[in-house]
Image (cartoon, rainbow, N blue to C red):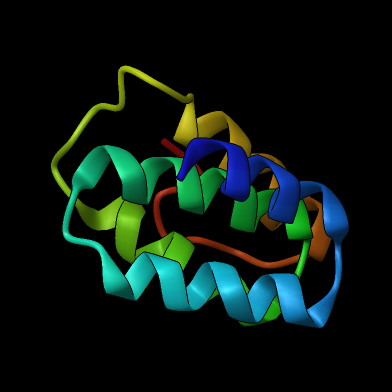
Length: 87
């Protein structure tokens, strides 16, 4: 799963966004979701914002990726605002 996600993370296409969004909803494992959301952030697609926002709402601190930093960069580059951006 990690290898496939890292490949999709670097493709930067609508198909990659679609694949990653489907993978996010297909798993309940929080660590796998963290990896998928990191890849979604790297897509820099506003289509991925619902999944990114959903993962950021969870009371979970990832031991694998720095989601706050990655999500902040994604939201900033897209010119979007997230309610928790100030904190």
